[in-house]
Length: 348
Ligand SMILES: [Zn+2]
Image 1 (cartoon, rainbow, N blue to C red):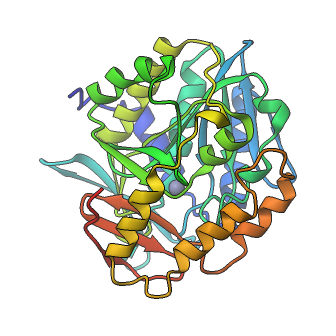
Image 2: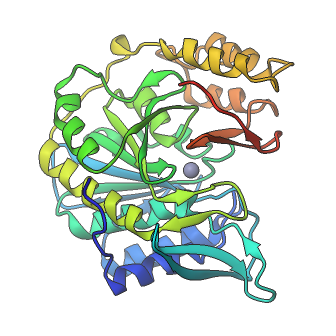
């Protein structure tokens, strides 16, 4: 596995700068303003839509690679947030959040500020590239469900950095594969992904690229962003893993080029329903079966049906039970919103 590409001092400082910006779903002004300032200073063509989503275009291409992150975190905005740098033999340089007035842990929000950092890095490094920063992912992809169709009309594929740890990626989101497993896209990305140490192919509920593949039928990836114990105050970031995500992203673009890779609705499969239902049913905390009920409601609402009006999709997230987030970290599964933390060992 390729690892330990050291992050330069300048880059580490930028990562720390971004991690120190407090931002919370529906309260993302500081992060949005930071991005607008940076993008303007760099002279990148960008605009912000009415929802607060930011879209960036650099260079000229018929089929841009597009990198994606979300601007919110689950942590309440606390202006005392300070980034603490530590070092260990196991993880190398790590970063975590503390309250600068009393040293108590504060969620650093690497989910998804690491993604924000990585998208900016890709914009800086690549000649022809797009970037999209979506608001309020944590409360149900509130920003990306309004993703700009015209902006994505010349996007060849989309890569999000919003999968936990350093070794995971989403195999499916909401039960749909992010790309056809037998496609040219799959053949091109497989080797690089494994080479960069990604071994945990996970069935995740959702993140923004789920909306992107549903709306625009393009192949997507959701890669590890280097954050651990997400959604907890003890969240931390492994700098080497962030850097690994950067190196992997560059290699993926070099391999995929500026081409279009479709992920047509016809090729979607819902095999993972089985996995999900098994996984959840094996747990003892779903006595009300809330997830399954809401999931089938989602289906019945026609979210995955073509021709559905975008605004109607808002409804599916308005159920309190539905609005939660789940991601795995080794054997630990963390739930956010409506549930406390659970330790579960799913046999996925
Ligand atoms: Zn996230």
